[in-house]
Length: 421
Ligand code: BGC
View (cartoon, rainbow, N blue to C red):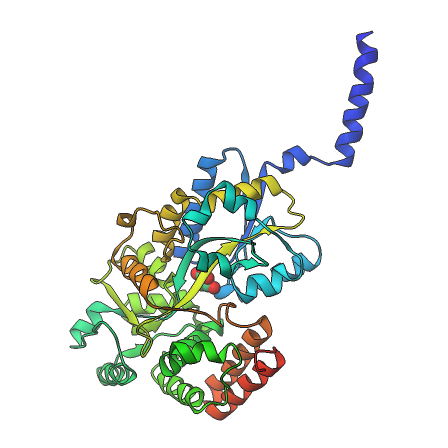
């Protein structure tokens, strides 16, 4: 009798299992896709994983990374997966054009307003940030931290030894005077690691902002000012002048290897987002003692935002685990563990600020009062086609230093990507 009752149930179970292979088991996994592979980046990512494991035990994390700063190698891999209907559960992305234009528009992400509500984030995440992630009033990603793109880092001991003092801000003239002094002393003034071209494109981005200022920055990326403007050409010339002071092996180095050249005193300065601070932290170097920082020349009072977020994939293989991941990275605990290692500031306003060192305190201050601007190099200010055209034009510029040609390429890119009206 017993046999008769059980066997149809077992049969049903077998049919069910065949139709929905290991759905329960699958939910014990989570695939997180990112390009966080440098020393500082990997340590910070691990802090997110450890926090998640504490908050949601028993889930196996698949750490899907594709090396290459700025996501230059990761994004094409991701695009292929998304287009092929094989999404990771969640992936690293920047707000603005990258998230909304590339992923939300194409239907790859689900809206997550219900998570914002259940976690009470509307009270602790500034609305201005939520807006950067939202389409038609619905948020599509959770930010784990905010980087500042326009920083100039330096080896403090090396500058002290050469009698160079950096104040609270730096003009282009002061920067070039320091470079001349260092060069005369036989020291390479500027470290660049543009084996991924984005790193030198970012040096141009910072120089452009330092030359045109925040209002013109907004005007350029909303089509109200042309890239043919004399100020853009002036920025290109200044950038070209900076390249005269860079390390000869720049094209063989990654951004973190360039940062290392500064740490080790082989070069004095590097212009890089504050993920470089994650490298200093990883190497146990001390703020204001071993290294220092200042806003990139001319950019005092402006903060280029490079924020990192994660969306929920439509068709996520492990959607429950992915939802928990988003809840976790937005939690106070995760934000306090991740950001001091990553070199970014938290998104939440209710974190314990004492957990953040001098640089990050400074960056938080800057964020609270400075002009906040999107980065073009990190996919926020303009469509991907513009970002690509900029990288191509910079690749050419590094060789020929032709300011007219760079400006003309950007004019064309603005037209092609519908920035220019
Ligand atoms: C990301 C950072 C990352 C940097 C270098 C940026 O696009 O926002 O999180 O550390 O690239 O890889």
